[in-house]
Length: 137
Image (tube, rainbow, N blue to C red; front, side, top):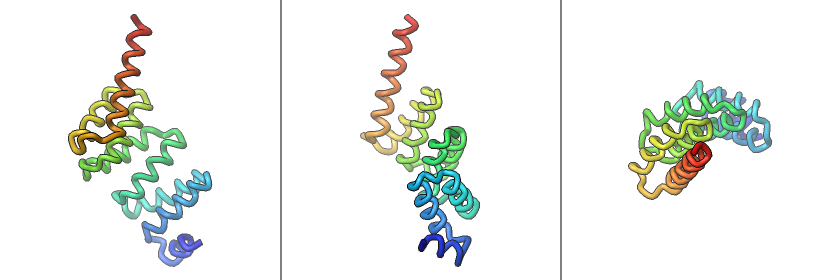
């Protein structure tokens, strides 16, 4: 209720819109969450909390292209953001592009050696590619 009131008082309050979107997302109201996140994106497309949460919603509504575009846009401005980089790599792999996922995961590891998610994803990609080769051979 406090975030709704804040948005009512100041519709341009990005953080309140992001928080309201998170509350809607937690209640599984994905379309309503998407409305709040898109409005926040219009106001401040580079808000990190927005990028993290909007990317998750895109994943849940099965729109990986939107998530990839969102994450790539963020990483152009903040290439050192390993959390977003790892999320991008995961989306790329899940949507059938292991080569791009590998490249992004390796970039994450350059910025943060030992990044657990990036390492786990590279292992998963290697295993998946090995299974594909075994099935074809």
